[in-house]
Length: 193
Image 1: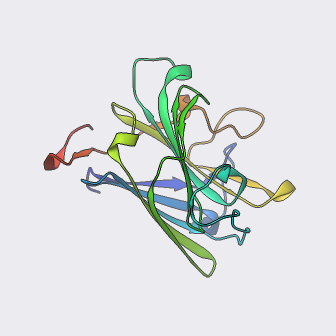
Image 2: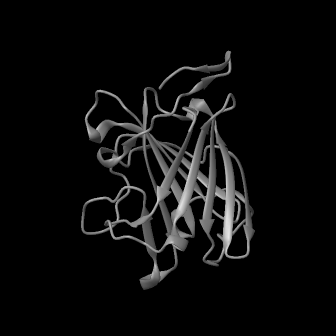
């Protein structure tokens, strides 16, 4: 696979149990001049959409959603790592949060070029995350999928997280991404591995 493209496989529950093949969520990340292109291929569970029109939507994590966390690899300790949380729903809603340390939100509701389409029991989404949104340095990530309600709520993960309940704000478990950034000023040139 080219250095500017990477596939993330959400194939476990949040605490590390395997899930059925048809429950898996695939995220393809690709470095482009415009930003990081995020393509989602996921099962659709039929959860109701959030209220309001598609676009930036607060508290999106309460609905059917795929979440991508991207952290900058820096010399700071885990409690101060800069990262972004990107939430994408099958209904076209999204939420982008920029954080400076665990759960320390410094910006919310960042705009995103995002489209989603539901086809039967699957959905696909495509987002372009501007390079300016991403933290400096090499990137590390984890991806999650949430669906269902109440006791039937499911929390799925690419990399399982420790603890007695799902807590996705754990940069220490994020995996380094071997993907290069592209610079609009140097077309086609990788900037940051």
